[in-house]
View: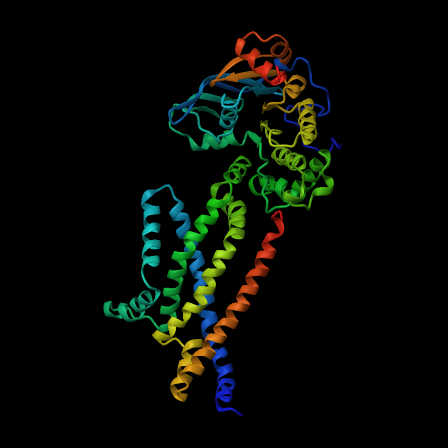
Length: 277
Length: 221
């Protein structure tokens, strides 16, 4: 760990300071209103409202097909909703019912960075090249600076030795950690995780969740789609339970996991926590 | 010494020289131009604009649906009829480039499509424009996939350049033909030409293997 070299999370303050209990008082970074999306005749999102405050960790849980990944992908433009608004503090603000405004879409994309379920690292680039590609090619960060920052980030996640290896030479957990570093290197305001551990062998899940938890504790703002309820319990400020294209229930992890109000939430949690009953 | 063997040995170097000064530069120039053309056509073919992809489709269809010899004759013997006279060498390069452009376009298109969608998405989320994504992420991966089929295209092209002898380009086969006409030893000279083409193609196959190994360094085995 070398906190001095690492990019400071955009929330400011000591990056290693513990999460403040009152994070919910912070300014809203992103608010989504009435997000709707259909794929053909299949309506996957039927009016999604939520907001993310700076420094907050929001997790989306729910059965497959509930629309949680589509929500996440809508936040940086990998999917385009049919209706609804997305508003980022400091811009842009997009109303999807209106004709596409390309500049606003690209501005929205640049506010966040995505960590994919299947890391999607560039196989023809080394670990280091993968990490500096965005900063150097897109953000025009001076090469020496980008390389130094990338090295510091790789060291933080325990991959200092892997700079010059190609992705296929790494384990699944290492690949995913590089994927996280590639996202961090862009210094986004918002980190998006799309089931970051679902494609991993069970024994590799821990090392990846550990890194994400650390980032959460440092104050990064993130939206995490996950099946790891234990992670949601420990790291999330707010849990959104989705089913059938709507947010069925939301609240602090403690409430949701110990005392769900909705029958659908209860059934989902039962299935996951006690699959053999 | 056996007369046949002597003729074989005496004509070996002139025929090889015809290959070095005719066949190889003709194939290299046509392949280079053809690849640029093929990339453009492949991208047009992938365009969402129906007119643009329609033009590319039409071009590929015409090139693949007509004999190379006919294309060559249209350019060299046909165009002068409409007042466009092109010398043998440029005529040959134009015809072969257009031909490579048609065949390689489909190879390149398939190679681009073989790169997983997640690569486009990852490039998009780190802020890349589509053009940068193509150049930095997609084409390097597509190149690996397209080396074997493009090598086949190139080897075919090397052999097809023998057709240029019919529009008076001095290359490997035309040298062999001239010696054969002079010595009346057709069997010997044509077999010798075949042998030399074969040696050229063996060397190319070796080069292909080395190129594939080099590009394989990031692929899991």
